[in-house]
Image 1 (cartoon, rainbow, N blue to C red):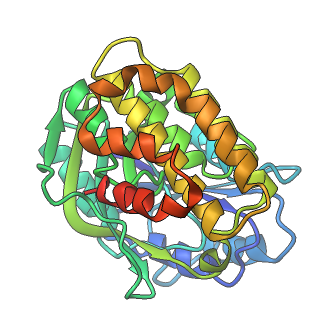
Image 2: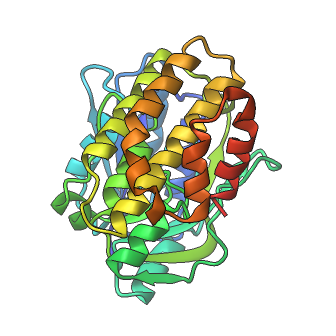
Image 3: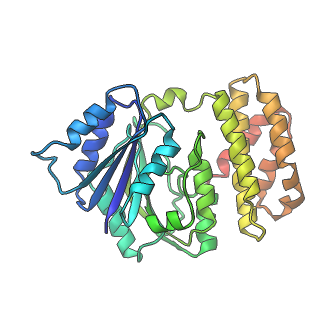
Length: 329
């Protein structure tokens, strides 16, 4: 089985060699490395190209290597899409260039895929570094194999596995047949991508091994800051998801719960930052999600309460946050 590891690169010079070394040192050899240069301004690509072109030594492994270049900065989504179009593997694996893989990551994921007759998606555990930060965990109650569209959709939309695009071995034909590309120009593009994947997916396999090392680095300084682009991205994501709501249940109810969770999380984030656009965004969320109220009786209690918490005064947001956090477990 061939795996295409897709690595977008944009101004990650301090980390790119660490990232690539972790792929070159994988115990599994049938890997296609696809590096996508998103027109950065530092020497990331100089370092990456030098490393990939090393003719001898421990890095001289029989791995296929492609280096692709954007002629302008187009963002993470576009870089991933470029890599996906160029990939030839049976499965693809998205890796951010400031993160890395444990030595047996791809081997463990492939072994799991083989064990369960090549499912659409294989997911491992994520280790968040530095240690002590909240881990991106897999729900411990999940079985190692989830079969059927309803169960698989439930797994994603209930966030029983991390919704990040990275650290997922995904069947390439499944992605392309269902047009599961990333929407360009967004922040939090993984939120929309996972939502879209939940509709057609039919089987998921899980390994409890750690298969991804997520480094906070500078992400930790900027991940929670609400910028105008981030605010508009959330609006676009929620609007797009509402337009895609299924007609049949239980999928429609699960999709609505996913949207409610996202809205509650972002509203709380803006409140904690005393953001100047908080009240305007709060009103937008309430107006946009108000039609869900006619169907809220289909939801589990936690989603029901979380929806109504959106209409509480800001001083009661802490209760809403607690409900949102508990909804993940």
